[in-house]
Image (cartoon, rainbow, N blue to C red; front, side, top):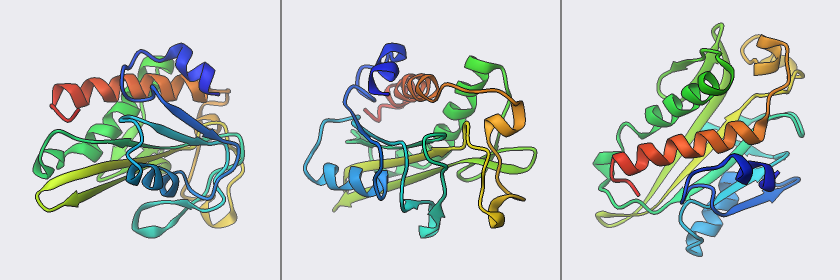
Length: 194
């Protein structure tokens, strides 16, 4: 998976270092551990399957094994916390723009952090800012997108969907990740975040 992502990637920082797990408890927990060790700026942790994925408000994020996108990344921002107020929305826009650019499908954003289609949730964003006094130690971003998965637990079937369920085709997880990283890095550079 890393090789395919790097093939499409044209970002210089975000995604330069990719750590891939077939299975892990949570990419967000792993990237936090690595951030404490001061792993390289823009490092991404990707999982084919999370046994205990984290959504917002500590909810569990369900993702079908080997079918969807589950990844987290770390940034060491140059800016102040206040300048990150619109960050989650910026990330959502980058995801929506990525799907539009590659496939021509228009997804929607439900503020503050959901990607939706036909009023069903297709993706979510988790942003965590860790500070030390007035300065930002690091910024963690977790992204989950339902791509090729079609099987959801009963309690999610009415409220969740995937690209494949909506558009009846296979999608490249690697291409989506790489194009997103390129777009998001441009956004970060333009806003003087990295």
